[in-house]
Length: 304
Ligand code: 13P
Ligand code: SF4
Image 1 (cartoon, protein in one colour):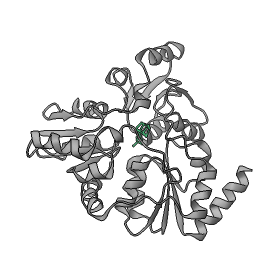
Image 2: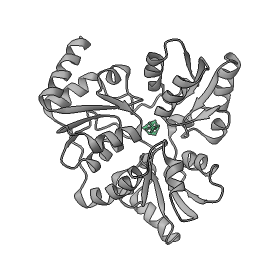
Image 3: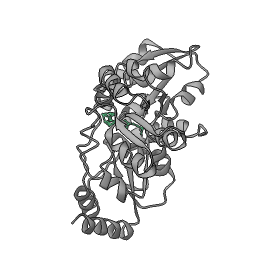
Image 4: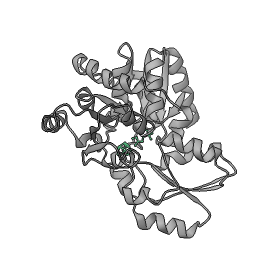
């Protein structure tokens, strides 16, 4: 049955000159059919440069919004409009403006896991893959970092010369990964390396052999001579890790590492979106232009 749906999706993608982008946390079958999978940075770059007419975004709302901000001439579809991000909802533009007013002249660095409106009130965006580079690119000594306190504090360790004002937002999925769960896995697999995402709590990141974005994990595990890894991020990442590294073993650090929002999108949802060309994600022009400024400043920073 799913082969029939996949075939229908492929035909409709062709028919509408559409591209299917999927985040590394999506269900296996959605990643399998995607034209491009990647982390938030790679998907933003792709959304900015694609010449498709339609972008089908399999991810959560803020990611589709970023695609709509970067590619105004294109139709951006989010097959599950109810796929949100609790971390993105932890800061509003009004709250950010109140904080800015307390710190005049201090630049705002905003993690892409945020609404278009919050981005519009920011100086520059970052993802987990480039947050350190973005912070280093600022000439100011002081900065406001929103909304992820864990990513912010992880970056801050590498730039002791900068003063951070943190927003206390967090990813509930990563914060459910406890120190005791990780230590238990380390006892069970003493020969494994522990890799985690910087959205993890600081006491968990402190246990890691390597901390990086989701795509960073693919690169690290592929090139590492190690053959066993405890993975500290959302379970969807295991699909491609196992596919690309058949001789290596990957163990999820905690059974709590499931993001309910990232798991919403099914093949049926993708098919329906392509059949109806809905639901469309769009951003009011005034907000879009300002948010694009913050995303463009981030994208102008060279990648490694
Ligand atoms: P990255 O794929 O950029 O590492 O992001 C992780 C995440 O939590 C996205 O919601
Ligand atoms: Fe948001 Fe965390 Fe889910 Fe990513 S994994 S969408 S940050 S709740």
